[in-house]
Image 1 (tube, rainbow, N blue to C red):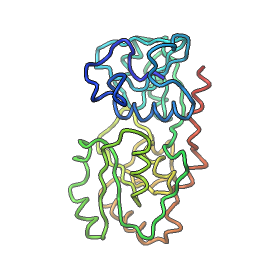
Image 2: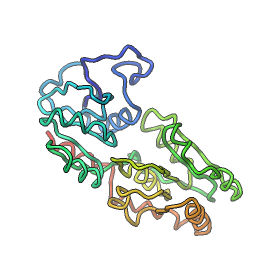
Image 3: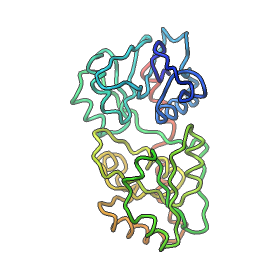
Length: 275
């Protein structure tokens, strides 16, 4: 699995994966690490991949720039990188992997490439369950810049309810994500902007721990997980859902845990069908 172009090394090693290799997005690092670990695939090999199926996971390519795809067969795992659609147009021989039904529909109607849909997996390989005695934390995970878009009074309103808001942005591998979910009771997913490509990864991750999610609704969430999370359209509705969840017995709070049967972490073994 190649996350970046092996022939275009970056000068900065501080931002590269595990101190070597090439510059990568954090989301690319984590996804690549999970897939390689689960399937026993090569991760950013320097050689010996020329006759392999190579999957490039959301590579760092600026708009308008080109990219050199290699291997016997190349696939672009686009995730939420809608700008990479222009790169796919330049390389119709490269397959494109999508991880939500909504994204599959969008890309299938936008590019001539072969587009495949591999459902989103979750990070909870060990099948941990969040144990709690009471509901005291709400967690949000993402880039630090995205926290500026959270409702202004979120922290204050949670404090009124005796609850703590946990913002988490410093993650570098799957275990960091697992550690975050082991500490929260409810997840909030709040993106008040329209994303051309989106997927329900955060909802699936939380639900695999038995943690319910309250989400500002998105089409990809509805298509994938209708009935497996709590959709809202306003901050007031979010607070109502928080109050409801605090009032229900703890044994019923793990409604989202049903996702384990619907979307097991092994779904990305569907990648093997690409070979």
